Image (cartoon, rainbow, N blue to C red):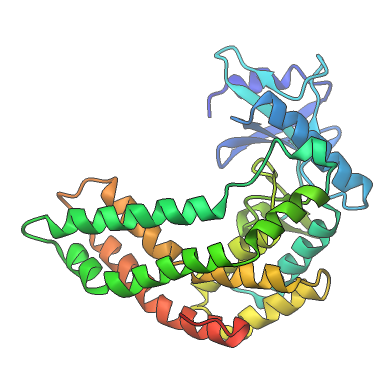
Amino acid sequence: MKDYGLEVLEQYDIEVKEVRKVRGAFLCDTDVGELLLCETKVSDKKTAGLERLTTHIIHHGYSKVDSMWMNREGEWITKAGDGTRYILKQWFLGRECDVKKEREVLEAVRNLARLHKIMKLPEEEILEFESNDIRDEFQRHNRELRKIRTFIRNRTGKEEFERVVLENFEEMYAWAKHAGDRLAESGYEKLVARSREEGTVVHGEYNYHNILMTQQGIATTNFDHFANGIQASDLYYFMRKILEKHEWNVELGRAMMRAYQDIRPLPEEEQEYLAIRFSYPEKFWKIMNSYYNSNKAWIPEKNVEKLRIAIQQNEKKKQFLASIFSFHL
């Protein structure tokens, strides 16, 4: 980050005692507590929506969110001399959720369920920020997978990565196609319609980086990707990230589902939606897409390892899906 950020701080009615750089932002010790100054690419319209959302959450008794501070001009976004846009947020002293500790993982799941119960805005305020249509996303990803397979087939002198792809493509693609077919036959449209009617909001990037464990409890940050959508999407995203690190451990997955549903029970259609999202070979698609968009003349050994892990983990994910959701190909 450029030091224009320090110039930006002068545009706020705060007394700054100390500033230090942290992961692309400025952490500020001020007379009103810890604040974080960070660059933003969020539009003015979405910034106004973000302010309405965090205010709504705080008014419903959840105070530990990174709400924004206005500058002296009464605006949420402050421009530096070079045109870079900044926002100043409330911040919290703590550390990221430790994904190796089951207790903290389950605390984070319960925290998400509590947030979801209050993350609702009037339909007219939220509809302009809609989540992506997952049907379109699956179809697009499947087209990309087929295109990459064709590309690899036509290459001469195939690398190990490419040979592993071709050896395992049929099975991995079968899961991808099945997920798309099941989603099309499911109650997905009803879930989308209900989310619109109820004005339900998703965080959009609920992962351990955005969950801070403080002495006063959990703080949730970075709502920049909020949207109107099916709230089980947040649970899917968080659980997938955690379970990939825990080899799709069935008992941990069951405990996470139970922790969430103790606070916000999931209707049958949302459970089906979750199972379908889990069944899609997301990691395989990401690795394939990264390969296709990179320099194919040299494929790092670590990419071959990542590919093999994604394929091996798919076997464990099958057991997870069968045990938790009675879901099979």
